[in-house]
Length: 250
Image 1 (tube, rainbow, N blue to C red):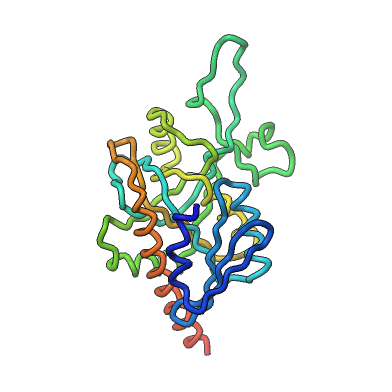
Image 2: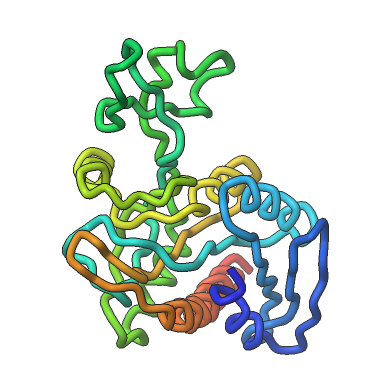
């Protein structure tokens, strides 16, 4: 959303805005390093398409997907930040057969790994599992290294769940947290991680808890600003790591 990226875009030095296929990109620098900020729009399709365009057009050294998320872990509070050690797709499930009139129970559905089979994932028993997209180690190290600069909450490693369903059923949320280890949920990270993985681009999701119905944490729109300010520091930290690696390589 605009509120999740425009503050960060405004901090770019020597910035210029571009529009490609309906998506907005801001090009500029942070501490002399080239940075592109992209407003993907909401959802998996928007994010996957925009990320693919960004990779082809700008050839990034790394991708960070940022924004707000709802809490799945009762130990997390509003303004806590989750670094996506992993992300998972909470939108790909297969239901079991039920006769007409017996209703539906999503707690019985099986996850589907859409990348595991060239055939029908729903018919391949090997695909009935949860695909996990790992965050890049160097990006994760940069984010952990910048954690001491963040004072509005905790910075923790966790699992970001993505899906185009806004879950408010506590039993369903508890299942995701217990079975798949999800810390938070939102609608984009896993799709961006998929594109990054297919193109060999280092990737990390960073999400701030904007609300958490598992412990009564009410929504706070100001969390978007806090997340962008933290990611700004992560980008600078990653630039220093990359610069040091280049010097060692020489």
